[in-house]
Length: 199
Image (cartoon, rainbow, N blue to C red):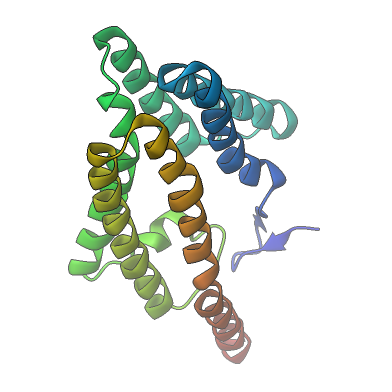
């Protein structure tokens, strides 16, 4: 059974493959780095992401556009790192993605626009003030994540940086996401209440 949005159209639910798309590349990155080094680890992470995009398409006939874009950028940077024989292109990838998110979300907040609504309105019906709060919170989180990665890759060894990415930043992101559940759930309840009152 699928949820429906305000227009009565089916609303996509969170999928197991969505969770795997976050875990599998990290697991491949960490495991391969232990045995073959950072270049191979980056390639394995890209390969795992590409495999999951393919599986999603085969099983659900759904093209994960953002995952495809992110994987394409990661693949280009990994290829550049290998060809230039510099690991910097691998290590700055998290900063580029986090920095881009922070820029979009915080710029939107400064202009009074909740960019999280633009990205996730198909998944959630939330009051505008909740969308704005989430946009600001995630924007600040991504800004902090960008700064943390920029410091980490400059001062840590390759192996220590991998540990930082897998065992500090990934869990921190998960915990921060969980911390946003209360405001999200309250917002959904309030939105549903407002919709019933307007009927």
